[in-house]
Length: 211
Image (cartoon, rainbow, N blue to C red; front, side, top):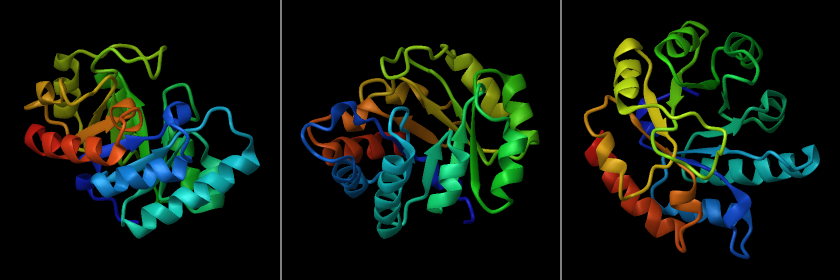
């Protein structure tokens, strides 16, 4: 699919820690109704068959709401389920190899914490960068902190869009204003909320202000 950086405005990353008695697709659909513009399925502990079934269900929802659907890390599963793209971290498969396996038409997102990593990912064929953690986060305990100055430097250094991630909530999102980001990626701010739909609607409005 042709990647439009406006899809990064409110980028939801799933986490099944907060399902609250519902299925993950149910929680995903609530978030999509609230205005999520892109969705990444992140699963670290599901077996491959269950992951594939879940990916297909979530992909169907994203297609219905016309929202790009990416898989975290797992290139093979992304290709099997027909996802729109993949997001990889610095410790995952090298970005150039991911691009080779995905081909030119899929979305490739790469995590970066430094200007050097950002430039390397851009050169390897990344469509966008995920930069963080911009605020302290409990979702990814091994995430390194990235200062707002570094975030601004990365945004200035690359031509591809940047999405900020890590500890972003409604209360601190506007602190990212003027940094050059194309959007924000959130996990608990949506999926730990009593109503992912209401949370997404509020975050969408704030993200528009910040960008």
